[in-house]
Image (cartoon, rainbow, N blue to C red; front, top):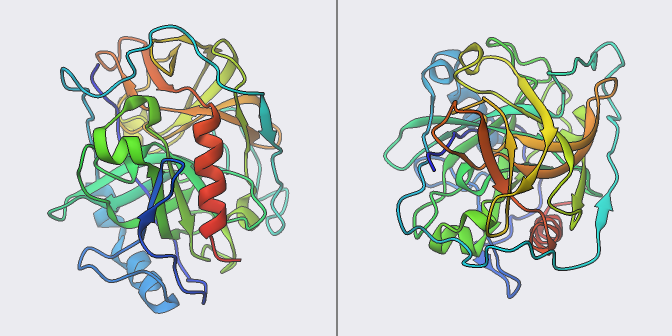
Length: 326
Protein backbone atom coordinates (compact mmCIF):
# COMPACT_ATOMS: atom_id res chain seq x y z
CA UNK A 1 0.00 0.00 0.00
CA UNK A 2 1.62 3.24 -1.08
CA UNK A 3 0.88 6.05 1.30
CA UNK A 4 -0.42 9.60 1.07
CA UNK A 5 0.92 12.90 2.62
CA UNK A 6 1.59 15.38 5.57
CA UNK A 7 1.48 19.04 7.21
CA UNK A 8 0.58 21.87 10.10
CA UNK A 9 1.31 25.29 12.26
CA UNK A 10 -0.19 28.18 14.70
CA UNK A 11 0.59 31.44 16.72
CA UNK A 12 0.35 32.96 20.26
CA UNK A 13 1.18 30.54 23.09
CA UNK A 14 -0.71 29.97 26.35
CA UNK A 15 1.13 30.93 29.50
CA UNK A 16 0.81 27.52 31.15
CA UNK A 17 3.84 25.25 31.22
CA UNK A 18 3.69 22.52 28.57
CA UNK A 19 3.32 18.96 29.72
CA UNK A 20 6.62 17.07 29.41
CA UNK A 21 7.16 14.46 26.74
CA UNK A 22 6.05 11.01 27.79
CA UNK A 23 3.54 8.17 27.49
CA UNK A 24 0.63 6.84 29.51
CA UNK A 25 -0.51 3.33 30.38
CA UNK A 26 -3.29 3.48 27.80
CA UNK A 27 -1.01 3.52 24.76
CA UNK A 28 -0.66 7.25 24.10
CA UNK A 29 2.52 9.28 23.72
CA UNK A 30 3.24 13.00 23.52
CA UNK A 31 5.93 15.62 23.17
CA UNK A 32 6.21 19.35 23.62
CA UNK A 33 6.14 20.91 20.15
CA UNK A 34 9.55 22.25 19.16
CA UNK A 35 11.29 24.42 16.64
CA UNK A 36 13.74 22.76 14.25
CA UNK A 37 16.61 23.90 16.52
CA UNK A 38 15.04 22.15 19.51
CA UNK A 39 13.38 24.98 21.46
CA UNK A 40 10.04 24.27 23.11
CA UNK A 41 7.18 26.32 21.64
CA UNK A 42 5.82 27.33 25.04
CA UNK A 43 5.87 31.12 24.76
CA UNK A 44 4.10 33.61 22.55
CA UNK A 45 7.45 34.87 21.25
CA UNK A 46 8.60 31.44 20.03
CA UNK A 47 5.18 30.66 18.54
CA UNK A 48 5.35 33.91 16.57
CA UNK A 49 8.81 32.93 15.32
CA UNK A 50 7.38 29.68 13.96
CA UNK A 51 4.50 31.46 12.26
CA UNK A 52 6.97 33.94 10.71
CA UNK A 53 9.21 31.06 9.60
CA UNK A 54 6.44 29.75 7.33
CA UNK A 55 6.70 32.37 4.63
CA UNK A 56 4.65 31.95 1.44
CA UNK A 57 7.87 30.82 -0.27
CA UNK A 58 8.50 28.04 2.26
CA UNK A 59 4.88 26.95 2.19
CA UNK A 60 5.02 26.74 -1.60
CA UNK A 61 8.12 24.54 -1.40
CA UNK A 62 6.64 22.11 1.14
CA UNK A 63 6.28 18.63 -0.33
CA UNK A 64 3.53 16.12 0.34
CA UNK A 65 5.54 13.30 1.83
CA UNK A 66 4.79 9.89 0.38
CA UNK A 67 4.15 7.29 3.03
CA UNK A 68 4.47 3.76 1.71
CA UNK A 69 3.71 0.74 3.82
CA UNK A 70 6.88 -1.40 3.59
CA UNK A 71 6.58 -5.15 3.35
CA UNK A 72 6.15 -6.66 6.78
CA UNK A 73 5.14 -3.38 8.46
CA UNK A 74 3.29 -3.61 11.74
CA UNK A 75 -0.41 -4.26 11.30
CA UNK A 76 -2.95 -6.24 13.23
CA UNK A 77 -2.99 -9.91 12.29
CA UNK A 78 -6.69 -10.04 13.06
CA UNK A 79 -8.42 -9.81 9.69
CA UNK A 80 -12.00 -9.93 11.01
CA UNK A 81 -13.97 -6.88 12.13
CA UNK A 82 -13.66 -6.40 15.87
CA UNK A 83 -15.47 -3.37 17.34
CA UNK A 84 -14.41 -3.10 20.96
CA UNK A 85 -17.02 -1.16 22.87
CA UNK A 86 -20.16 0.91 22.90
CA UNK A 87 -20.59 3.61 20.29
CA UNK A 88 -19.80 7.09 21.59
CA UNK A 89 -19.70 10.64 20.27
CA UNK A 90 -18.62 14.22 20.94
CA UNK A 91 -20.89 16.86 19.39
CA UNK A 92 -19.60 19.50 16.94
CA UNK A 93 -18.92 22.97 18.34
CA UNK A 94 -19.61 26.23 16.50
CA UNK A 95 -17.20 29.14 16.21
CA UNK A 96 -17.55 31.82 18.89
CA UNK A 97 -15.82 34.53 16.88
CA UNK A 98 -16.23 34.25 13.12
CA UNK A 99 -19.25 35.77 11.40
CA UNK A 100 -21.55 33.81 9.14
CA UNK A 101 -20.04 35.64 6.18
CA UNK A 102 -16.55 34.54 7.25
CA UNK A 103 -17.73 30.94 7.49
CA UNK A 104 -19.42 30.72 4.08
CA UNK A 105 -19.15 26.98 3.46
CA UNK A 106 -19.13 24.92 0.30
CA UNK A 107 -19.33 21.15 0.09
CA UNK A 108 -15.61 20.82 -0.57
CA UNK A 109 -14.33 23.65 1.61
CA UNK A 110 -14.88 23.49 5.38
CA UNK A 111 -13.37 26.11 7.65
CA UNK A 112 -12.54 23.32 10.14
CA UNK A 113 -10.23 21.62 7.61
CA UNK A 114 -6.84 23.03 6.81
CA UNK A 115 -3.35 22.41 5.55
CA UNK A 116 -0.49 21.56 7.88
CA UNK A 117 3.16 22.52 7.45
CA UNK A 118 6.15 21.14 9.36
CA UNK A 119 9.84 20.32 9.19
CA UNK A 120 11.03 16.75 8.88
CA UNK A 121 14.31 15.64 10.52
CA UNK A 122 17.10 17.26 8.55
CA UNK A 123 15.06 20.38 7.81
CA UNK A 124 12.82 19.22 4.97
CA UNK A 125 9.61 21.19 4.31
CA UNK A 126 6.49 19.01 4.35
CA UNK A 127 2.71 19.23 4.43
CA UNK A 128 -0.48 17.26 5.34
CA UNK A 129 -4.16 17.85 5.97
CA UNK A 130 -5.96 18.10 9.32
CA UNK A 131 -9.15 19.33 10.99
CA UNK A 132 -10.31 20.80 14.26
CA UNK A 133 -12.21 18.69 16.77
CA UNK A 134 -14.51 19.98 19.49
CA UNK A 135 -13.41 19.79 23.13
CA UNK A 136 -13.89 21.74 26.33
CA UNK A 137 -10.51 23.47 26.03
CA UNK A 138 -10.99 24.18 22.31
CA UNK A 139 -7.37 23.57 21.26
CA UNK A 140 -7.36 20.23 19.42
CA UNK A 141 -6.56 19.51 15.78
CA UNK A 142 -6.83 15.90 14.53
CA UNK A 143 -4.68 14.36 11.81
CA UNK A 144 -2.85 11.13 10.98
CA UNK A 145 -0.11 9.82 13.26
CA UNK A 146 2.35 9.99 10.37
CA UNK A 147 1.67 13.74 10.11
CA UNK A 148 3.10 14.36 13.60
CA UNK A 149 5.69 11.55 13.98
CA UNK A 150 7.78 9.44 11.60
CA UNK A 151 6.62 6.17 13.18
CA UNK A 152 8.55 2.97 13.99
CA UNK A 153 11.10 4.52 16.35
CA UNK A 154 11.45 7.74 14.35
CA UNK A 155 11.20 11.35 15.45
CA UNK A 156 8.56 14.00 16.01
CA UNK A 157 8.18 16.73 13.39
CA UNK A 158 9.01 20.35 14.21
CA UNK A 159 7.74 23.88 13.42
CA UNK A 160 4.21 22.45 13.15
CA UNK A 161 1.61 24.90 11.77
CA UNK A 162 -2.09 24.62 10.86
CA UNK A 163 -3.81 26.91 8.33
CA UNK A 164 -7.62 26.54 8.40
CA UNK A 165 -9.30 26.67 4.98
CA UNK A 166 -6.04 27.44 3.21
CA UNK A 167 -6.56 28.19 -0.47
CA UNK A 168 -3.98 29.20 -3.08
CA UNK A 169 -1.77 30.94 -0.53
CA UNK A 170 -4.57 32.69 1.37
CA UNK A 171 -5.00 32.24 5.13
CA UNK A 172 -8.52 33.56 5.84
CA UNK A 173 -8.38 32.69 9.55
CA UNK A 174 -4.62 33.11 10.02
CA UNK A 175 -2.29 30.38 11.24
CA UNK A 176 -1.97 28.36 14.44
CA UNK A 177 1.23 26.81 15.82
CA UNK A 178 1.35 23.55 17.78
CA UNK A 179 2.01 23.57 21.52
CA UNK A 180 2.16 19.77 21.96
CA UNK A 181 1.88 16.77 19.64
CA UNK A 182 0.37 13.38 20.50
CA UNK A 183 -0.06 10.01 18.82
CA UNK A 184 -0.60 6.39 19.70
CA UNK A 185 2.45 4.60 21.07
CA UNK A 186 1.83 1.75 18.59
CA UNK A 187 2.34 4.23 15.76
CA UNK A 188 5.46 5.87 17.21
CA UNK A 189 7.14 2.60 18.19
CA UNK A 190 6.12 0.18 15.45
CA UNK A 191 4.37 2.10 12.68
CA UNK A 192 1.04 0.29 13.14
CA UNK A 193 -1.39 1.60 10.51
CA UNK A 194 -4.21 0.38 12.75
CA UNK A 195 -3.29 3.31 15.02
CA UNK A 196 -2.13 5.96 12.53
CA UNK A 197 -3.82 8.70 14.57
CA UNK A 198 -2.45 12.06 15.70
CA UNK A 199 -3.63 15.13 17.61
CA UNK A 200 -1.97 18.54 17.89
CA UNK A 201 -2.69 20.79 20.84
CA UNK A 202 -2.56 24.34 19.52
CA UNK A 203 -1.34 27.67 20.82
CA UNK A 204 -3.61 30.68 20.55
CA UNK A 205 -3.30 32.32 17.16
CA UNK A 206 -5.09 33.21 13.96
CA UNK A 207 -6.70 36.50 13.08
CA UNK A 208 -8.25 36.93 16.54
CA UNK A 209 -5.31 35.73 18.65
CA UNK A 210 -7.67 33.11 20.08
CA UNK A 211 -8.04 29.34 20.39
CA UNK A 212 -8.44 27.47 17.13
CA UNK A 213 -11.88 26.00 17.89
CA UNK A 214 -13.12 29.37 19.12
CA UNK A 215 -12.03 30.76 15.77
CA UNK A 216 -13.38 28.21 13.25
CA UNK A 217 -15.42 25.79 15.35
CA UNK A 218 -14.74 22.10 15.75
CA UNK A 219 -16.01 18.86 14.25
CA UNK A 220 -17.59 16.24 16.41
CA UNK A 221 -15.98 12.83 16.96
CA UNK A 222 -17.41 9.30 16.80
CA UNK A 223 -15.96 5.94 17.78
CA UNK A 224 -17.19 2.33 17.64
CA UNK A 225 -19.73 3.22 14.96
CA UNK A 226 -19.03 0.16 12.84
CA UNK A 227 -17.04 -0.41 9.66
CA UNK A 228 -19.75 0.45 7.14
CA UNK A 229 -20.75 4.12 7.35
CA UNK A 230 -21.30 6.96 4.88
CA UNK A 231 -18.61 9.67 5.05
CA UNK A 232 -17.31 12.80 3.35
CA UNK A 233 -13.49 12.85 3.17
CA UNK A 234 -11.81 16.26 2.86
CA UNK A 235 -8.18 17.13 2.22
CA UNK A 236 -5.55 18.84 0.09
CA UNK A 237 -4.43 16.28 -2.52
CA UNK A 238 -1.53 17.19 -4.78
CA UNK A 239 -3.11 15.35 -7.73
CA UNK A 240 -6.15 17.66 -7.64
CA UNK A 241 -5.43 21.36 -7.67
CA UNK A 242 -1.79 20.88 -6.73
CA UNK A 243 -2.62 20.70 -3.02
CA UNK A 244 -3.68 24.36 -3.05
CA UNK A 245 -7.37 23.89 -2.26
CA UNK A 246 -9.70 21.42 -0.56
CA UNK A 247 -11.26 18.52 -2.41
CA UNK A 248 -13.70 15.90 -1.23
CA UNK A 249 -14.94 12.36 -1.77
CA UNK A 250 -18.16 10.84 -0.50
CA UNK A 251 -19.21 7.24 -0.11
CA UNK A 252 -19.57 4.21 2.11
CA UNK A 253 -16.67 2.66 4.00
CA UNK A 254 -15.95 -1.03 4.51
CA UNK A 255 -13.58 -3.21 6.52
CA UNK A 256 -10.08 -3.24 5.02
CA UNK A 257 -8.44 -5.79 7.33
CA UNK A 258 -6.95 -5.29 10.75
CA UNK A 259 -8.51 -2.30 12.48
CA UNK A 260 -8.80 -0.25 9.30
CA UNK A 261 -11.56 0.94 6.99
CA UNK A 262 -11.47 1.76 3.27
CA UNK A 263 -13.39 3.97 0.86
CA UNK A 264 -13.35 4.84 -2.82
CA UNK A 265 -11.54 8.12 -3.44
CA UNK A 266 -9.03 9.39 -6.00
CA UNK A 267 -7.29 11.91 -3.72
CA UNK A 268 -3.60 11.14 -3.27
CA UNK A 269 -0.55 12.70 -1.60
CA UNK A 270 -1.37 15.74 0.51
CA UNK A 271 -4.72 14.47 1.76
CA UNK A 272 -3.07 12.47 4.59
CA UNK A 273 -4.62 13.39 7.91
CA UNK A 274 -7.77 14.81 6.34
CA UNK A 275 -11.01 13.87 8.15
CA UNK A 276 -13.60 11.30 7.16
CA UNK A 277 -16.78 12.99 8.36
CA UNK A 278 -20.12 11.39 9.16
CA UNK A 279 -23.16 13.65 8.71
CA UNK A 280 -21.11 16.42 7.10
CA UNK A 281 -23.22 19.57 6.83
CA UNK A 282 -22.16 21.72 3.90
CA UNK A 283 -24.08 24.67 5.36
CA UNK A 284 -22.09 24.77 8.60
CA UNK A 285 -18.85 23.00 7.66
CA UNK A 286 -19.14 20.56 10.59
CA UNK A 287 -19.47 16.80 10.82
CA UNK A 288 -18.33 13.90 13.02
CA UNK A 289 -14.78 12.66 12.44
CA UNK A 290 -14.91 8.87 11.99
CA UNK A 291 -11.38 8.29 10.61
CA UNK A 292 -8.54 10.15 8.89
CA UNK A 293 -6.71 9.54 5.62
CA UNK A 294 -3.81 7.18 6.36
CA UNK A 295 -2.52 5.51 3.18
CA UNK A 296 -3.61 4.39 -0.26
CA UNK A 297 -3.20 1.50 -2.64
CA UNK A 298 -1.28 2.73 -5.70
CA UNK A 299 -2.35 6.34 -5.08
CA UNK A 300 -4.82 7.55 -7.65
CA UNK A 301 -6.37 4.14 -8.31
CA UNK A 302 -9.45 5.21 -6.39
CA UNK A 303 -9.16 3.81 -2.84
CA UNK A 304 -7.55 4.73 0.44
CA UNK A 305 -7.55 3.48 4.03
CA UNK A 306 -7.91 5.01 7.47
CA UNK A 307 -7.70 3.67 11.02
CA UNK A 308 -10.97 2.38 12.42
CA UNK A 309 -11.98 4.74 15.22
CA UNK A 310 -12.55 2.51 18.23
CA UNK A 311 -11.70 3.02 21.91
CA UNK A 312 -8.13 3.93 20.91
CA UNK A 313 -9.12 7.26 19.37
CA UNK A 314 -11.26 8.09 22.41
CA UNK A 315 -8.25 7.33 24.61
CA UNK A 316 -5.96 9.57 22.51
CA UNK A 317 -8.58 12.35 22.47
CA UNK A 318 -9.03 12.22 26.25
CA UNK A 319 -5.25 12.17 26.75
CA UNK A 320 -4.67 15.19 24.52
CA UNK A 321 -7.46 17.12 26.22
CA UNK A 322 -6.08 16.25 29.67
CA UNK A 323 -2.63 17.71 28.89
CA UNK A 324 -3.99 20.73 27.02
CA UNK A 325 -3.71 24.14 28.73
CA UNK A 326 -7.00 25.65 29.83
